[in-house]
Amino acid sequence: MSEIRSRLLSFLSDPFVYARKQPKFILTVTVPVAVIFVISAVITDNIVFNIEYMIDNAYIVTLLGFYIPVVVIFGPYVYFFETEIFRKGRISDGFTNALNKLANTNEQGISLRKSMLITSEGSTSKLADEFETMYKKQEFGVPLGKSIIETNNKYQVPRLARLFRIIKSAQDISNNINEVLKTASSLSETQDKLVTERKSRTRQQISIIVLIFFIFIASLVLMEGFIIEGVAGSQSANEAGLGVLGGGEPVDGDTISVLFYHGAILQGGLSGLVCGYIRSGSITPGIKYSLAFISITMGVWFLF
Image (cartoon, rainbow, N blue to C red):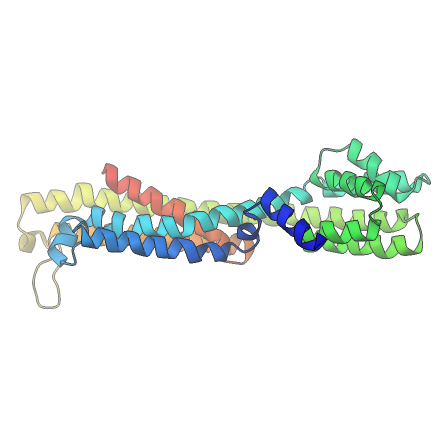
């Protein structure tokens, strides 16, 4: 009964905890909402499945039939996903410094429990805050080993899990574990350097992709505004040579404009996913880039 009460209180204090830990579950809500929105747009004749209508009203059709549903579906997903990433990232900030201080205080013969309190008082990192929480839990009779397990389960960060596993195993043997902490601190410092170098490399690569995206958008806008419309305005489609289909019929400027528009959206979506893959080895973090690039494309076509 106490376990149920504890879980209920934990949920009430943070009702979105499960959405953060499993953001894909939010899709069970956002997808039906997006589908209902599209159906409503079709019923109210804001979206008409007619080629001529879709070309003449390309922006509105794309806005209602694609952009808004995509934002509705993936906006909340990105929010909860990134919130959890940020929360886990905070525990790694000041990670090495907190370990160094914990090792130094423990080396002076201070107990591990007291060392945690001293570390928390002299640091503003999230890990130091967790050390203080562990200290307070021990005052209420919660064993250190159990506090470590609870904190580890709270964040589920591999780097943190390795540290807590080391501390728990060493603490079961002796209260003086400064050598173990120093080793963990040294490894953490090395990992910090590797992470910093990797972020620097990926930041450059992402900057190049972003630059290419903007050049692509600018090129399409210039081609549409100063070349296609200019030529189409001074000559007939056949004379301008704007393009012909397989049957030999000319392609009008509006059709080419729509192709440019949707090509820019496709470019933005794919570029965003590539950015996410480069950044973390997974396309999921790239969804936020895709939403940003697609939004920029929508804004550019709205203005021009």
